Length: 408
Image (tube, rainbow, N blue to C red; front, top):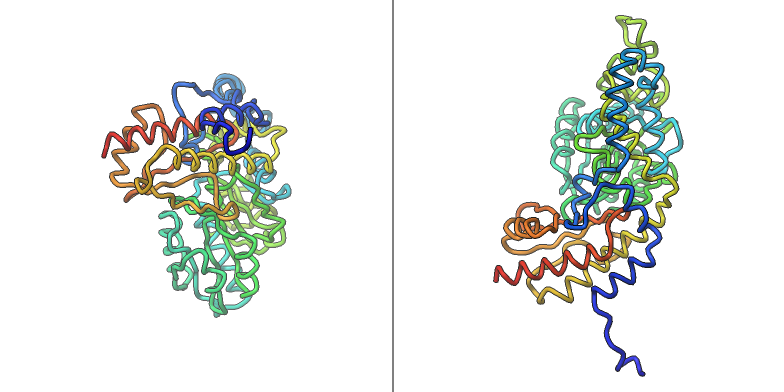
């Protein structure tokens, strides 16, 4: 039989074949999921790892309920921010001792931007500009603007792709999102970092939409500072603690704008004068949020034995396949992908532009396909390689077509 006469493989059949050969397929059992729902919102809130419920029950019942204050030492509560930070470092390409877990992403953005400006101005007081990418996640923009005012800097918003060219002799720091939260566009971390350094400035990367979805290479690419949340692809739970990365050689110069007692060199000396601790501890502020930190700690167990290269390969295969299914099921012109087709420019989500997107997403959710909606007209579908199946991608595209047919 010639290629021209061979029967065409249906999207459903292709999904079944791809799931059969998927080396990560077995990891789905590490999560609390059901087959009635296609969950494509892990880029907003990751699914619950199966071990977290028992761990939290033990933390509450035994560590808090029985050991009580002894757990700060006997259960390792006090050192949890650094220990869990090192686990996040293993997933973002940071050697131990450079990441501390705790606080929110917003608080860590503030610490990172102000700290970076202070370091830049120590070297050159004329550096009075903070660059921020124009389509940044709102909290990054709000905090960058406040940090700029507090440090006597002007803030300048430019397209993320243009930050490398925009950095100049007045630039103190650039704050860049690794992935655009609306479109899923992956920005050039190595190239932008090198260009900002060539201009004599520092760069802070927001990894909220990449940590756990693809290799980041913080140390490899010489990143100065980075922040990120843990409730998306790292599956840490709603409001899970964020993290702060400060490159090892910069740590002695990092002057945190929030010098809390936990980052003091000797916290229990209760000294009136602040003396900063060494290492990643310098990024701490107040008492660690133990219950959510330890939930995150157990959530990270799902990564045991997992290759980030395999995760990235499956992410690209899933998003490719979803776009292929959308093209097969949805008539031309009804939706348009704003996520780059090029693999080097794509995160782990697909964003589709369509009319009445809010109502469309509401109907998708009612039919068991959970993504999310971003103003004004974006449908977002997040693909978490640890638990998303190719059959999920096919079903989502098929149901999308049915919903769109009903709205026309």
